[in-house]
View (cartoon, rainbow, N blue to C red):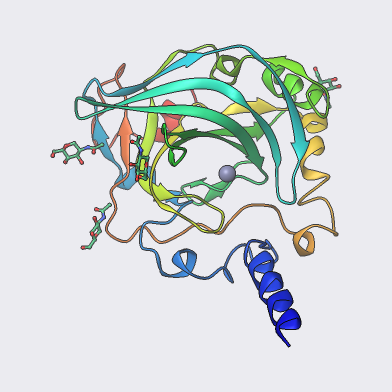
Length: 260
Ligand SMILES: *[C@@H]1O[C@H](CO)[C@@H](O)[C@H](O)[C@H]1NC(C)=O
Ligand SMILES: *[C@@H]1O[C@H](CO)[C@@H](O)[C@H](O)[C@H]1NC(C)=O
Ligand SMILES: *[C@@H]1O[C@H](CO)[C@@H](O)[C@H](O)[C@H]1NC(C)=O
Ligand SMILES: *[C@@H]1O[C@H](CO)[C@@H](O)[C@H](O)[C@H]1NC(C)=O
Ligand SMILES: [Zn+2]
C-alpha cells in the first residue's frame, strides 16, 4: 500500500519544520545541536575585543506601509524596509531587510542579564539568504516607545512604519557588538553577521504586555516560557565592540558607557 506510506512521509516533513520553545531550544536537533557558531550568546563586556576602525553599518530606510501579525512563535512585521550596507574590513556587504520580529525576554544577554524584549531586523542578500541581523534590546520602564507603538498599531492593519525610528533616527550605526553566529530558530543556519546595538531602548508596561501576553505571559504558549532560545557556547568566536565616537580603553567599565 503506497498511499499510507506517502501520507506518513508528508507528515514527517511537515512536523520537521515545527519547533517548540518548551525547552527553550535545548531539544532542537541538526545544526542547532551540533553547530559551534550558534546564536544567541551572552555578551560579556569585560572580555570583548574593542575595535574603532571606521567600520560600520549604513542603513538606508524606506518608509513603507506594513502590517504585523502573530506567527506561531513571534510577532513579525513584513515588508521591504531597509537596505543595510555593512562595511567589513573595507568590503561592503549589502543586505535587504524583509522583516523584523520580536522575542520576549531578550535572546542575547549582556553579562548574563536578559532584557525584556529584543527586536531582530533580518537582512537578506540578493538571492534570499539571510546574511545579517541587527538586534535591538528594550528595557521595561515608564517611558513609552513611539516606534513600538506604531508596530503595535500595525497589528493586522497597514500602518506607515519608518524603521529608522527603531534606531533613534540614526542612519549610520557605529556603536554595536558584532560577532558571527546563526539564526536563532531551526534550522539555525550559520554564517550570519550579528550586530547587537548597544543603546538600550525603552518599552512601557502596556507595550510589553502586547508581546508577552502571547508568549511568556501565556500558559498556552511554550509551556509558559518565552520565545527566546537559550544562549549558546561561544567556542572559538570573538565578540567585538565597535565604537567610532569614543576611544575605549581596556578596564573602562562598558556598562557605564551603555547607560549614557
Ligand atoms: C578584519 O580583519 C582582521 C585582520 O585580518 C581580523 O582580525 C578581523 O577579525 C576582521 N574583522 C571582521 C569583522 O571580520
Ligand atoms: C547569498 O548567500 C548565500 C549563503 O551565504 C550564498 O550561497 C549566495 O551565493 C549569496 N548570494 C549572493 C548574490 O551573494
Ligand atoms: C505606554 O505608552 C502607550 C503609548 O504612548 C500608552 O497608550 C500607554 O498608556 C502607556 N502605558 C503605560 C503603563 O504607561
Ligand atoms: C572556529 O574554528 C573552526 C575550526 O577550527 C573554524 O572552521 C571556524 O572558522 C572558527 N570560527 C570562527 C568564528 O573563528
Ligand atoms: Zn529572531
